[in-house]
Amino acid sequence: MNANEFPRALLADLSCPCCGSGFRVGLELSASSTGLRDAVLCCDCYEYPLVGGIPVLRQMSPVASTRNVAVDHLRQGDADGALQWLLAAGNAPGVPAAKRSADGNHASARLVSRIRNRFRLVSDRSTAVDIRTLVDYEDVLRASRPAGYAHYLYQRFANPSFLGALPPAFVLAQACENRPRRRVLELLSGVGHLSGVVSALFPALDTIMADVDYLNLYIARRFLAQNAVAICLDAELPLPFSENSIDGILCLDGLHYVRSKIAFLEQVDRILGSEGIWLFAHMHNASVPNPNPGAPLDAEGYLHRIAFGEQRLLAESGVLEQFKRDGVLDLMHQTPLSLLNSSNALTLLGARDDHLWKRQTGLVAALSRRRELLALNPLYRIEKTADGVRATALWPSESLRNECTGHVPFPPERVHLGPSILQEIAAARTGASLSDSVSGLLRSFVLVPLPECYPRVDLLSG
Image 1 (spheres, one colour):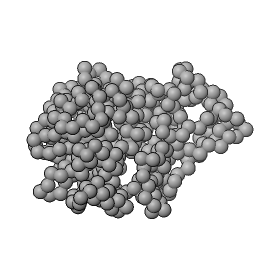
Image 2 (cartoon, helix red, strand yellow):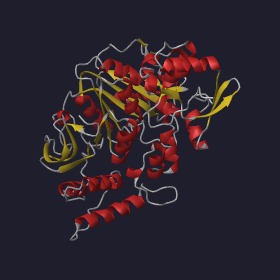
Image 3 (cartoon, rainbow, N blue to C red):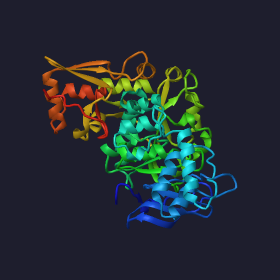
């Protein structure tokens, strides 16, 4: 199957989030025997566009209408027009219908222009930019997101909210590798950093990422998670997956933004299989102030709302400290409530049975499964010195630095790499055993499995 196609086999486990009926393919504009690139999916109540291999299971129509402009484009044979409209309107609430005219394409084009200029696809110079023509990941972020948010997304490997999710995500992925189906779903996936790392390091898994924002998923599939399947959906509605169809669920920095938590968690319980595992990482804590809180709960609140399986609720800072020190995640005991109540962010790992509740090792080995991807964290500015390399954190803004570093910089602000460690890094990238020094750089995320869309620094060049 082509990487830009949506697998036909997955359609059997999907249903409309609004009427609950299954899907039939009403139009195949670009497809193969195993996958769909541009198509229309029909249920009993609506026609959904599938564009660029991403089904958009949101009813983006005015009230009392079922007209979807992207579907209109597809039925006219205009997949590019459907993509253009979704990139502009895919996250805009209450998208109005395009005005009817003799030429519907011109009407919808005017709508795209209005929404693009109002919402997203503008550069810092307020000049409209077509991100489809851009080939550089950072350029796409700068053209499609406000500057501060673009910096945040580009420097995800410097943010403890992302780094703290990796050790428990590896625990989940390793367990799901042993399932017959091996299907992992990331909900509220954003631009796909977590799905990208998981799908790269655990290629045997069928990784699915889901987000309400089509533009997020478009960026993810182009740059960060090319091997993951993408579905555009609204997590406030019933999840469009059949019962017991998912082995593992990931959700990073998202649960506190879901308003209907009870309904959402009931859906998580429904779609998880009998040996299901779930991870909710970087949950905001209602007991601690947060500048962008969403609607968080406190530690007891999160535990009480998940009424299935067994849980371990952890302090995110504790997860990072364990991994940095020992490369492990200790799940043997529940964290004391007094410690959780004072934690800025919480991590919840759950399972249907008790096989996870031990000291989890092998996480550094998981982080380095794809040795060719290991590279210096993109946060660092590199200076060659007489005795090696000096790496210094170069924060794009003071606000991002404050968000990521807190009281203890992580990753470290400055690192010196002498000639011997540079040689050890080079050897590790070609398959040699990890030295203690290289393992330490991995545990502190100085070295990371960097997606190929990020530039690499040749540490050994003269």
